[in-house]
Image (cartoon, rainbow, N blue to C red; front, side):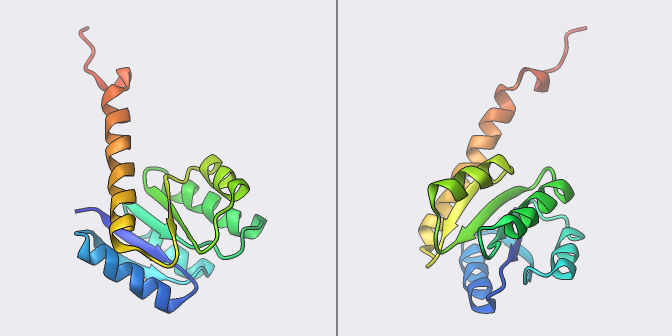
Length: 136
């Protein structure tokens, strides 16, 4: 079971996404708003997956993603938003986001998006030559 953290300034959205993830078989280990102290508290939990609504799609919001990527280099990051345009998607992907969750939440779409990203990463990991044992 993957450990998940949910970061969103809106408590109702956090609660709804937590319910979707719980129902999908994920272990939600914590939720927080986008404050620095809240995010730092979640980082200490070392979640394997983070769902974050960065708020406005500006440099401050993208700085949150960059900070999370730095703090949790092995975690899967999902950007949660009510509006996703091409520049936002491109910028987020460049910062290491693995997937996108659109508000309002569609439970089956959220779970499918996360599972597809996990499967894709597992396949990439298995296909990487450095992961096979050396015959030396």
